[in-house]
Picture 1 (cartoon, one colour):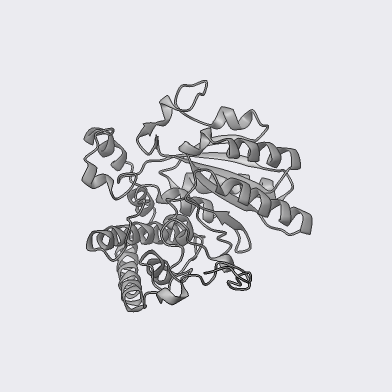
Picture 2 (tube, one colour; picture 1 turned 45 degrees about the vertical axis):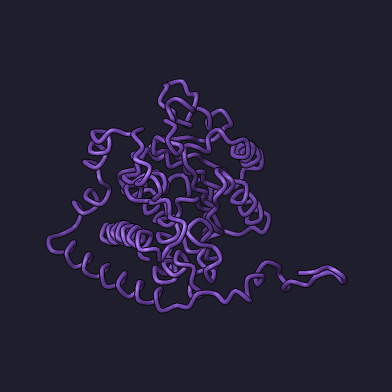
Length: 329
């Protein structure tokens, strides 16, 4: 995916938005079982950060990770098939919504455990540094991870070892339904992790996560610092999810957010802000192209077969399932 121009970045944001909207419909129809965590509203973060990366760079993702995987260049058809649990998926239908990976693109995997991608990213960054590889690793996580010990431990190691890793917090204001301002202690009382990260010696910066260009500028600085041997950085992207934490939230009718709050954030829609940088007629052309791409993706996903139950134990071990003598399987 070419993210080097405003048009390319708009296309990526549009693709992620429409992919997620299509996924919502497939959850309703039962094609995607178990639901998803929609990324709608946060697209500028994934696109802005991935636009600062090179093909050899790597990322770790989260339970809300479709946008990260797509922005890093994953095939939408295989991604949609993965969500639908089909053998044509990125991980043959085994990973699903919260565990999609594509090692060929540097996507080391999404993770359903809050904050658990950080130490994986640090390990990959340590391996790159030891090998003398010109590679940077980015780990995405939400504000809910700011109170996870594993993240703080990883910050400490990354700082001590000067690892080429960039920590990207997508602070959408809520850990499920818990407001960040009431859960994360910081000097400003806003629920930010900037001061906390700075306390570990990380260069730390907050940026408008609803603006792909602003995210790109900040991410470029952090990535170049890491690639040049300057060590880790913390980038906090202030953003907002327009949908619920999970698709199940629509049925639960929760009231932790007001319609006015959601409307105010929708006025800052990253899709509209990105479209403002396009020339006349460019948006319509790109939108039509995205629709064709997703129509083909849907056709591919629905045509892909479901896994054979007899293969349920496949891919669990590097050399296949080899039981010990006398052990029943």
